[in-house]
Length: 449
Ligand code: AMP
Image (cartoon, rainbow, N blue to C red; front, top):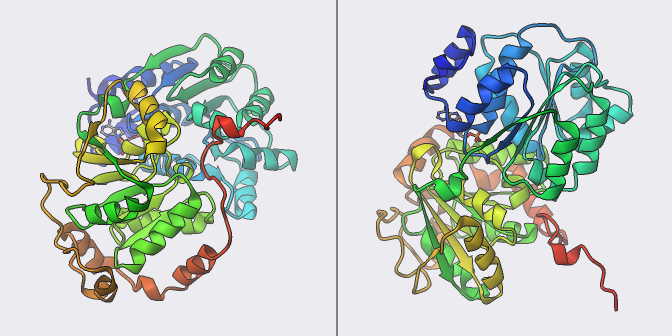
C-alpha cells in the first residue's frame, strides 16, 4: 500500500513525498482512513511506529476545511512532555507546508505572552501539555467549546505523570460531539476507564512494539558492580560508539555523568526534567546536528525523542519500569538502521531485569567480562583510550568518528568557553537529590509503623 491509496489530499501527498516517504507504516495505514472518516480511535502503539504522522496527516486534511476563531482552537493535541509537544509541532510544519493552518504550542518553559498572542488570533491546532493548558484555561485565555478534534497522545505516560485528572477535566470542557483519538503504548485499567468514558465506539488498532519486534536492535545485559559502571561506560564510548544516548534514573546522576564525560574530553550533553526548555532544545539540537555525540538523559526528558542515527543506547541505570526499557532502547535502531543497546545491571536490579524480560518476552543476552570483550563487530573509534589525566588535555584535537568530525567542522563552537556551559556547571553544584522519573510504587505509600 502507498500513501496515495489511503485518501489523503494531493497537497498532503506532495509534502509527504518531499519528506521521502511513500509507504505508510502499519499504524498509518490503519489509522488514517478511520480518522478521515471522523471515527474515534484507540491506537496501541509506541513512538517509533510512525504514530505521530498517523494523526497529524489526517488532521491536516480535516482542518483544511473551515476557519479558526479567536481563542477557540479547532483541535487539541495533548502531549505528556514539552519535547513530544515540540516534535508534534515540527511534524505539522513539515507535513502542513502546502496548507495554511495556524498552530500554537502551549508548553511550560516557553513565554506565556507569545502563546497567548497566538491563541488570540485563533488557531487550527493547539498542541499542549495538560498543566499549561489548564493554567491558561483557568485564566480565561482559552475556550475549548469549539474544539472538535482531540488527540490524547502517550496516555500511559500521562498516567505515570499524574495528568489523568487534568485530562478528564479537559475532556469535559470539549464538545461531546468531538472526535477523539487516544494513543498509548499499553492499556492499564485507568486508561481503559478513560477511553470508555470519553470515546465513542472507537476503532481499535494495535501495532507491534517496535522494540520487541525490532530485530535491528541488538540488546545486551552486563552485570557490573555500581562503582564500576562509569569505567565500563567510558570503555565502551572509547571503542566504536558513534553516537549514544546514556540513560540514568536520577537527574543528579545525569549531571554528574555528563560532567565527568566532558571533563575527560567526550563531546557530551545532558537533558533532564530540571533544565529549562531553551537549554533542552539547545542540547537536543547539538545532538541532532552532531555537535555533540553523547547525550546523557533521564526518562522524562527523553521519552519519544525522534533522533535519527543513534548507534548506541546505554542504560547506565537499569530502568525501574519495564516500559521505560522499551522506550529507551527504541531510541536506536530507528527507521531500519542497526542499533545496539547495553544495559548495566547491578545485583539490586535483578527484579527490574526480570520484569523487563517478562515484558519483552525474551531473555537479554548477557555480555560477560565487564565489557572487556567489547563490541567486536564495530570498528574501534578513532579516539584511542588514554589515561584520564591525558585525555582532558586532548579535547581540542581528539579524533572524532568520521561522521561527527564532518558535522563539527561546519558548526562547532567552543563549548567549554560558552556562558551556558558555565551556567550549567553552576547548576551542577546545587543540591538536588530528586528522582526525575515516574514515582516508583513503593514510594507512593507512607510507612504505617
Ligand atoms: P513516530 O513513531 O511518530 O515517533 O515516528 C518514528 C519515525 O518514523 C520518525 O522519524 C518519522 O519521521 C518516521 N516515519 C514516519 N512515517 C514514516 C513512513 N511512512 N515511512 C518511513 N518513516 C516514517
